[in-house]
Amino acid sequence: MSELKTTAVEHFEALAANYEASTGGATRMVAVHLVSLVTPSLGDPSAVILDNACGSGVVADEILKKYPAATIHAVDAATSMVGIAKQNLKDKATSNPVEFDVMPGEKLEFPDAKFSHSFTNMGIMFFTNPAQGAAEIYRTLRPGAQPSSHPGRSWAIVTWCSGRPTWPSAQMTSP
Image 1 (cartoon, rainbow, N blue to C red):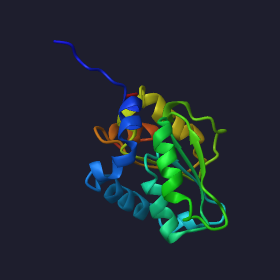
Image 2 (cartoon, rainbow, N blue to C red):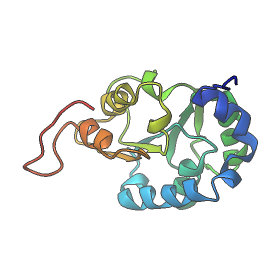
Image 3 (cartoon, rainbow, N blue to C red):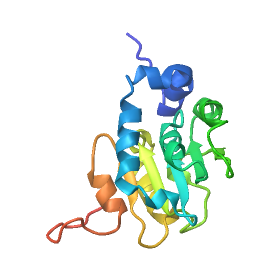
Image 4 (cartoon, helix red, strand yellow):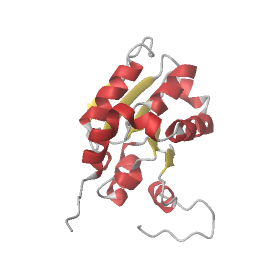
């Protein structure tokens, strides 16, 4: 019996048009929670936000509901997902339109320390190299900034990404 194998990007390319409905709203519920963890700093005029592995744009959408002038960059490795996110967010931003790019989270094409906030909502588990994705998140965050992520399978990646233990007795090891 032959086995059908697809990559995560191929899977999301095919699923893009129905992605949010296919999750039963779970990604939006997680996005609401992640955004609530850093509100109101998202409204700071100096804030530059990354919606990494943006999917259909639910994180950016939730941010724009509260802060329509937010500066947001939304990226995803799946071209179809970026297209859906553009469509979903086209009229949401006010003075700063969301900037979109097709870009894998483990190969972010942004300079070091660009972002004040970085959200990766249920995406890091689909990266071809989650540890590299975590390193890229950390590299692109400003000093002192913390990632907001729901990695799916393992919170250890977020702890490693933050560059320091979350409690005094924790031992840092690469995932």
